[in-house]
Image 1 (cartoon, rainbow, N blue to C red):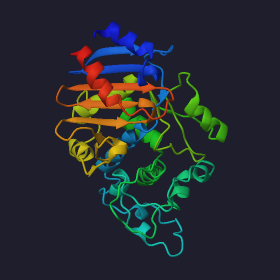
Image 2: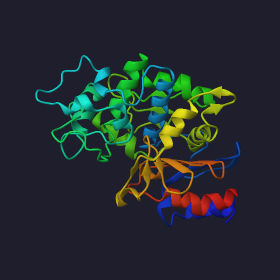
Image 3: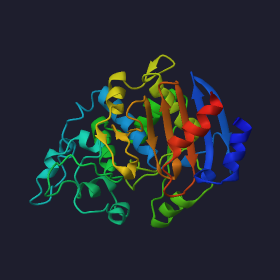
Length: 329
């Protein structure tokens, strides 16, 4: 399959690829593939859903490198001295940043309180009400999109600036990428439109009424942006001779700490990043609708893919390896 055939294959929409908007690939520091569908252009952005978590992991590393956060074993409650813990709650005092990054933080209840959090005035403090519980720290993997909002609150309190400002000055702009802007609205109707609308978006980031970015979803980016973020990892945290994030932290971020179950394709999990294969140097930040940053250290390849809303797409790594890599090789 060549580039023209790959374009036609995606255009045909015979499988899960029908919602793909953009594919951008970098190999050995050079662009080797750049293609778009559904009226999108290279510079257009898409809500990349949980790929946002992978970016938050990088921001946590930047805050650590700055010395604003001491280490990942620092307690979450160190950053919220003004928060009133519910009566009888003890587990919350034991939760660390590492628990948030590895999705092993405990929460009350069986499901995430989306309505309560997303209609509140301060999403970070509201989700804090659900952190902890009677079972204590069990080390169990519990995928919690809203829980990562606590990480945003920690970063903002530690650095004394909003995450979007930190990200623009210390991550996006040094990489030559457009700075993100706050989306602004956060009504129920707007949140629905933000997920479902298939039109191109600006380089924006959803936020709560306090101007704090949604940490588990809601960053808008192009496939080009995603591939460049992957390239940063391939280059050990440096870009154009400038240190963006330390190699030490990147190594920790990509180290597999947990083996996931069938629901997550038996992949390994680091700090909000996946390691799809036990024996290969391949890593990914993965979001719903097939949005992905794919990083292959063995081939020195970074691939970004964006897609409009289409639930239950879990095969983008396989698609990249079987369809994209042969084309760019």
